[in-house]
Image (spheres, rainbow, N blue to C red):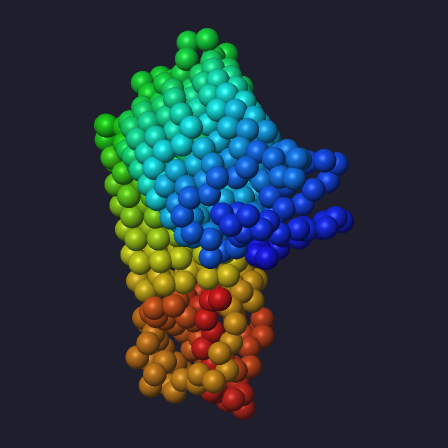
Length: 483
């Protein structure tokens, strides 16, 4: 029997093997006079026709993981009478070229056909009302899908990374399209949202790199499109800007108050975007991978910027975060390799994990005293940074609290002198040794501190970090690396 980590099936009835020569690889269970196919030997090969009855009992269900990893099966016929295909039912059948789904099936389970990577076409009959989460995920050769008029729900990720799919016609019965349902379907050029759709998850078309326009049926009362850009009917939410839409600049309509998750992800043609006053939130990954984006102004009305919102905007050189934003999320500006400076307003209290990771051109950043939390690897791989200016001594202490000592790495005075961007050492008026330096240039954004460091030994003078310790203190230094 196959085992899928994290899943547990409990059967309270006898499991019997089939002994027919062509079906000897199957096992099944019978309960209340109905048969469920529960397993297939992973070594089974070729074509398999599942009978409609076994020992006089109808076959009504393909169980969870029944054909999981049956990588040598090429053709499967599901009999009339089957109503449900369970989750992972045919997942990773990597040689499957054809499967027949009968009109009796009403539900296709989560991950049911995941990674059936040479399956080229499939017909979903009118009886099917729901396609489960990631049901056809990674069916990379799937070029054609015919969907019957009975379908009402397409769950999240249902056709995720079906990279060969060039078009899909959604029937007027569909009411719900889940998050990422068609994510990274890189060959789809256009899609029409039928008038029946009432709910569409965020990122439904994220990563569709060939998508030039989204159309909405005239009778839809929940969504609309303007020049191929998808909005809610009130045009307060910008849902999706097609990744392959032509034009270098885009002005978001004044009515918009929210930019949805993944709204502009992967829009590599855009060099400039105008966000109107009135926008209050920018969703997760909203502008991720907009690699040509050079100019964007965030209005003062924005109070929320999501995780990875500007991640991998490799051409963005500067950005101003407005007052009112309270947190910089995880990966928000990660891999913005052309970003040279950024000012963080006093309203910000936290900087998320990897918020500025791999900002390889970032040279200057000011952290206000309001910041009390700096996440792991927040400034990792920022080799050009020569100065981080904490607003006060308290803020520097908070920054140092976010790093971890590597106690096996000691540095001599010569090494410190060589690694620092600016370095002075001497006795101050109190007779104590005082070192002044700007942040050391290092590939992993390391900073250095004396072995014995307390809040009283740290100060900031004209943007320069000062460390002070008495001649009796041990002068060995440890390296502190952002984790």
